[in-house]
Length: 307
Image 1 (cartoon, rainbow, N blue to C red):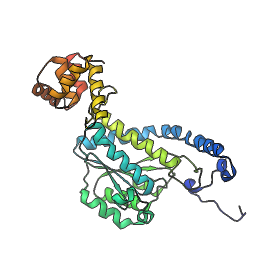
Image 2 (spheres, helix red, strand yellow):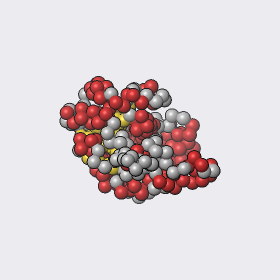
Image 3 (spheres, rainbow, N blue to C red):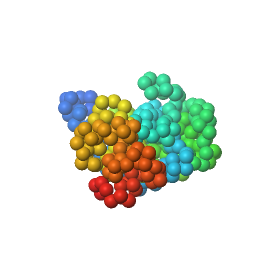
């Protein structure tokens, strides 16, 4: 490096001293370096848990208030956000409106890299405008640099509509951090391949988004203990999972679990209540509704089930 050269001040764009001359190394050594760098990410994310927890409470409150959680991102960040949002309805049988994702360049950008779209500030407002944001919504901007024009403009637009905002970034003192109400900072440092933030930064984003969405659903009563009690039984694997959950909670045989599944309309929460007290589907649905959909509240009241 020439003496007059100044390193990029953005840490995600700096060279990683541990991977210099990686192109000269044997394959296994390359993989060990990548693996060692990846191993650093979990502890970095752990340091951000207090901010992630605040985000979860904000997200749960938004959904309770009939608002939404809307991820926004470009490139890798946008694709990771879209994946997380897409998994929530099938995992927890929730309305797709609860957790959404907006990606620069639209649906096509999910499978094809449209790198120029991340610089389009005008599209950010145009993409969010149809959402009709309110104070009950939470918009989470995801960008490793914390300076992606599309994502920054999205947060600015969201704030102008009164929505709550969170920035998920990997760089300190970024424009997104200065704009958002709350920042989740994961300082993963330079990448193995300089500037390739699909690597450690992307891994950190994936972990953070998983934590936000999963913990939010837990707070909203979408699990019972650690069982996926709201699973949507739409294929053989998920039907089998639902049957096993019923058998474990109620201690019943497969044939009884199958009967309860059918009688409940494949609603596991209703099936558990029916099996626990021997009531009709209508009675079980009423009890569940009275408990605002929280099975733990119904089961605890009955003194039934594994605590």
